[in-house]
Image (cartoon, helix red, strand yellow):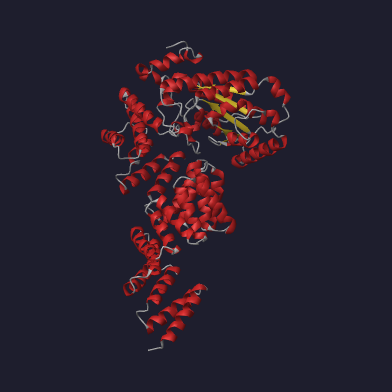
Amino acid sequence: MPLESDIESTLDQAIASHEARAFDRAERLYRDVLAADPDHPDALNLLGVVLQDTERAAESIASIERAIAIEPDFPEAFANLARGLNALARSEEALAAARKATAGDPTLGEAWFQAGLAHFGLGQDREALHAFEQAQATGVDSVELRMAIAAATERSGDHVLAAEIWDAVLLERPDNLHATIGLGTSLGNLKETDAALELHRKAVAMAPDDNTALYALAVTLFRQRYDCNELRDVCLRILTTDPDHVDTLLMLAAALTWLGQFDEAREVHRKVLALRPDHPDGPWLLASVSNAPLPDDSLNELRAQFADTSLPMASRIAAVFALGKSLDRAGAYDEAFLAFKAGNDMARQEVPADRVYDRPAVLRYFEQVTTLFTPALFERHRSLGHPSELPVFIVGMPRSGTTLVEQIAASHPAIHGAGERKDIGALLARIAGNQNDLRIGQWDPGLIAAETARHIAMLEGLGGNAVRVIDKLPDNIQFLGQIALLFPNARIIVCQRDPRDVCFSCFSTHFGDQQTWSFSPEECAARALDIERLTNAWRAVLPGRVTEIRYEELVGDLEAESRRLMTFLGVDWDPACLDFHKTARQVTTASYMQVRQPLYDSSVGRWRSYEKHLGPMLALLAGHPRCGGGR
């Protein structure tokens, strides 16, 4: 048997090689030690670590457990056992091992780090952060620890702090894949979607076959909703190696739905339900891509999902709205109204405090803009904006026909429909520091020139060879004065529809927390009246800049109204506009199914089917000019 000094010398050489990351030589030397002394606890422990370092965590467990069996009071081995178990996602066992390590040596930073990772794997973010803090207190300051803290901080909801930590890691290691993904995720949660998208595309370029990077990109594309073809393609890449990943399948189904590929979307939803028959979103998602009345068993599934208080509130709300729409299609209007009311009552409870609709504040703003934006102001600042004729804005109340008008216009080969974009609010915030800051005389002309040029360049990138690019965010109606200043040659289309139909359609649509005035027919009516007053003000100060499309007239004479629209947009007539439902483009609004069908008039006067439930709404709208004085 070799001398003890020879064994220790070999072990020292192995440790030196290990520290130098010469893993093959370190492993060989550890095994040489064990050949001479099979029960050497340090060699067994460190062999396990080098096996982990060479991605053989499963193989490492037996070696480390044998070291612990020989020397039960071995905190370092317990910490390394936790490391291997964490690598195998055996979080509960890892936590137990890490606790034994910290009990044996509370100053062992690696043990606290592994305890934090185990807590994180179990979804215990608060406990994970506490353990990571303990690791830091022992002097551990590795990039891996800081990334773990960022991940736990992000998941606990502090997106701002998480982004700061990820950013600091990237300053130190600019090509770190996990930090690139992590910062993108934090920025996405902060609604900085374009920055998130840039980072997640970079991550995929760094690791094209990494499903973590691909999934992060898919989530950001799903949130952005501007690149549905890319979303579909990224989901398909993930599913190539992970064909049963349910969340990816759901995003794929959404992309297919927005692209008008409803048959394919239904098949994906059916696969989700086959994989997860109890999936809380399955029944309503399948219902969402069906225009036909659902069979009784499907209606009963939606009723049961709505009634199941163990399900997430979001799933229950979506289910009851799907139930309402299905009952509406079946002509069961009384039950449908009750379903819409139940969904809205629950949705109201889910609105964060900072998203609650503040009508007095909105009216104060409307009063400010209608007072400020006068012909004299436009004359005074006539040289302020960018002269491009590329931008087109479609505005109005939601559900007033904005998606239909965009689809008709975007069917023209010279016009690109870019969907509902948030660019204008963000642009105004960059120029003024706040999108509602109306101190126009204090705006920096140089910044305005740069920002408007950047906006036009972005539209050119979206539109390719198009001579007009449409932004159809309905709420841009509140910024028409600013738009007219910044883009004096932009064309503005205001969509109008019988406000009784608009209000009921908004009430029966689940907007989440995007339209928090829509939870009752009366609140919808108040919003419609406010928007009508604002529209009147814009009509007065923007003559010739604005045209109005009335939904009922469009439905009544599609060709005449479409020709008028093309004349306003300054393009020659193209008959493709009449076949708008055949145009292959993404539509991510609630009208994604309607605009894939030939024009129909069944939505005109839809409110009458619910008249007996709408008394307060109708009373408020009685004076609206488009209600014709009543019935």
